[in-house]
Length: 276
Image (cartoon, rainbow, N blue to C red; front, side, top):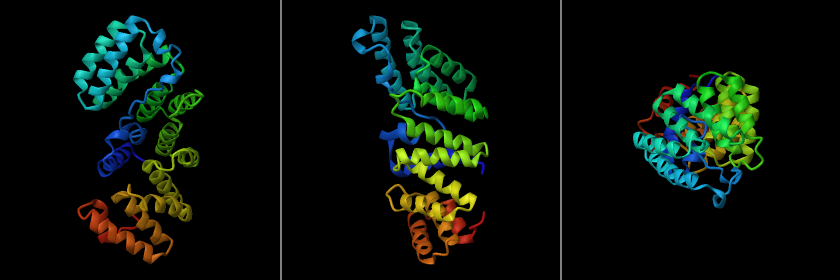
């Protein structure tokens, strides 16, 4: 199965809107159009008390830049980052955030340069490796992406293994490597079963492979939660149709029509387009 970046982006954006999850961007945007940065401060070799004055000033400005980035004020964030880098040119976290901003702006060349610098300055920076891996995936550099994701997870203090495994699985699925994608998504699900993007994509992959029973398990868990959306309900309907469960299919259809009456999935349901 091939999962397009456009489809992933639509799905992630729809979930963010439905879940009103501005406070968990780091969890839900990982592996989507613009993975959010999560600071792994434990993994930094220099503690805050050991920082130089220049690094301390740079870190304060970096926090400002991160805030502007989170608010979507990319130009202001870039201006702040220029000051950060001028103050401390060896601050790898600044280049990581700069890479994220350029990804958001669609400037992949500058994003790649930024992530390379971040990783060169700190080869153990799992966040930068994760973000670099996702950029490589967008560029179709699948083997390099696998290496970056794998390197991120070699850091024993890295707390974002679930998001990196999810991103790796999405990338592998995009490149048509369904078996390894299933393994990566399943491992991510074991670490974070509450992530709707992981659950949906794992169920969707299994559905496409014809493993309807296992797909039913994952999509039912998602649709029984408050994070169900039009796409997950429609996938659930298609799974139940294949499993010949008209009662479950009817319940999900009623939810889809009631909660998302103007959605493309509602239109597909009304057409009976179960095999599209």
